[in-house]
Length: 105
Image (cartoon, rainbow, N blue to C red; front, side, top):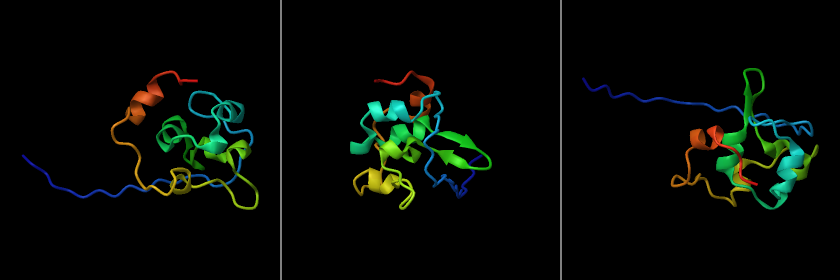
């Protein structure tokens, strides 16, 4: 039996700076500073390591002030972070693989 269906998915992302942000692996803004997030860090990893709560949605390292988040402008969008590319690298490791393995320093 073949079922053809269309699905729509909405992803809510928190959009207020959070200097106390902690990701899925338990790392905070200091870790992201060590990854030079202010100069660019891949969207695929921001998403893979993001934390999630039902009330706040997805929270990524882009909420860290050291990664460019400011009270005036809020966090940098994934679109802007990826140098105006709307695509996440489909040929790298999957988000599940990234979440299940230790981070690379």
